[in-house]
Length: 292
Image (cartoon, rainbow, N blue to C red; front, side, top):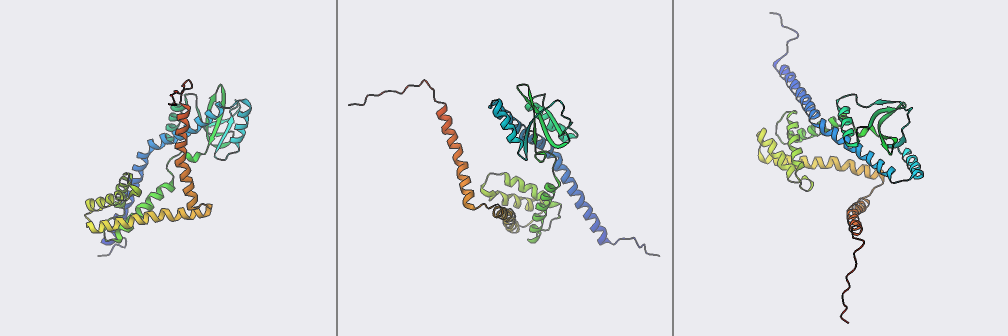
């Protein structure tokens, strides 16, 4: 009987079936993540954009006609944020072209008013333009389009790399789990990191231990050891690039300490100024006898 040259051995059939299962799991995980983060991303993007518009509106309202022109010229020189008067001859294209952009546009109108315009280009210039009015004077606020939009492939690759890192550390301690299972471990780690502990110490390790012992029946000692190493690896892979960027920008640890001190002092100064401003102007000091 002639042997079929296209027949695959049991090993290769198992290999391809596992590869298909892994690819299907990653695809399902990505689609689930995109579906779950759709509405929060749209609301968050619209809120950030509306905050910028409200800041620009407040700045324009607090200036007179001459200073308003200077303010517009100053903002026009910025790279990520530009403000310009809206002219009747402006040609713009609507921003709402897909489901996410329509959700962002609807949320912007609910926060800024029904007369708000959202454009993806204006007079041939691509970007994110929000049209609003102040005392019947229309304006365009150009915002960096990177602030809004769907999840980028770089974000997806980052999540996949984190899951791959967890899988490698888990396998290094003899806990045999498939690559697709690392996404389940990653989801448990997200829950653990959300617990308010200093540096996620304790909550990260417990979430990992519960994940690998409950779902994959790993030994408790191996799970604890792997959790410690995984936490250290995750910490180093974040700190080392941060140190490199600090050195490149000329920032020192002492400079970060000064910035932290300023950030802690600003709320105190604001509270003192609010308390002073809230004092009643018609309060009279109470005169008490000196006892002399």
